[in-house]
Image (cartoon, rainbow, N blue to C red; front, side):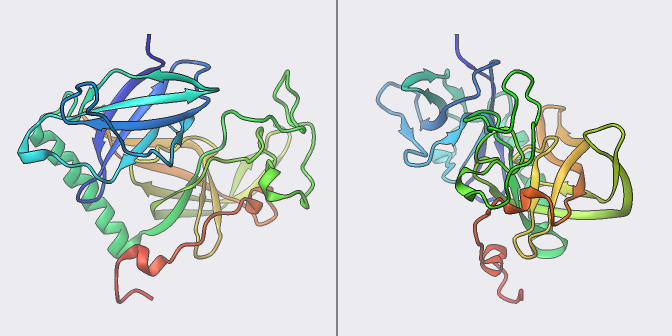
Length: 282
């Protein structure tokens, strides 16, 4: 029985790009995933798309920027390989369109591409999407039996071994650069703390996100231009095609005050002008 479930190939923004997403059986989120493509699914025809950059299995997606449909054919297959502690687990081959036809695939791609262009050329901005680790080496500040945080981490700890007051060392998986558009902001909103007897005043933003990575509660977003940071709250509204394929998400974000330990998580530097691909942007 495969550990992979609900494997889907969906369009994403870009001329030759598709996202392969998956879910995993319970307790199978550890390890790394390699993604392979084949035009025929015949043994010996598979080519690994990410041979030097496997993705953490728990993140649940990989974007293939070399998605090509040869000669207009509707055939082609993806297959996943999860490696954990030297053990290999394969998925079954999955057709490039799944239960979509070419027209439906094109309609989804156009909707996502239009949203991306709106963000890139007008009122959106690049952000890093940071997914908290779901496995790995447990923080020494976490009770292994209850999962409760036993104390705060020293701010002078090496960022490479820090937890940022999260359950696992490293805090987050490698961040993904994506796009975000803010369409409403409410300042000084009351937010309950982890202790029900406490609350704080925070700024709450309602934002629009591209479909991948898929947002979830406590995911963090970082604006590389200002280093402002937010975390996802409980209100996440998917925008779906046929109730299955994501076109985007509307999400409630809580602004993190600069004293929050998650500000110590280091994100890569990025040339925002080059990333926007707009010569006139400054």
